[in-house]
Image (cartoon, helix red, strand yellow):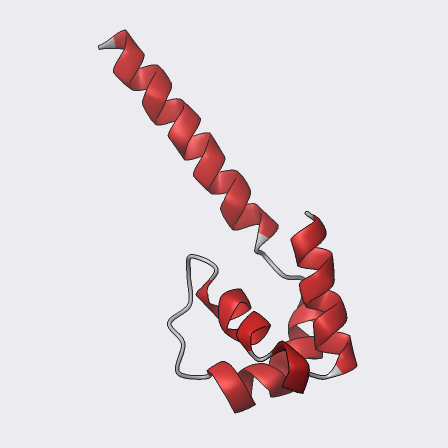
Length: 75
């Protein structure tokens, strides 16, 4: 039972770190808002799906939004 609790704690910590890395500031969201509305508005939030959607449209994104995506990848 003890091993199960440790495994659950490790998984929870790992997932919370991943979620935190994909959290954008208000300034970053503003930089990608128009691109999100144009290319990814039908994407269900969560699990990094919006970031993945924007990344698929990378060549068409604004420079500001591309910089946000690049910064997220470095985290």
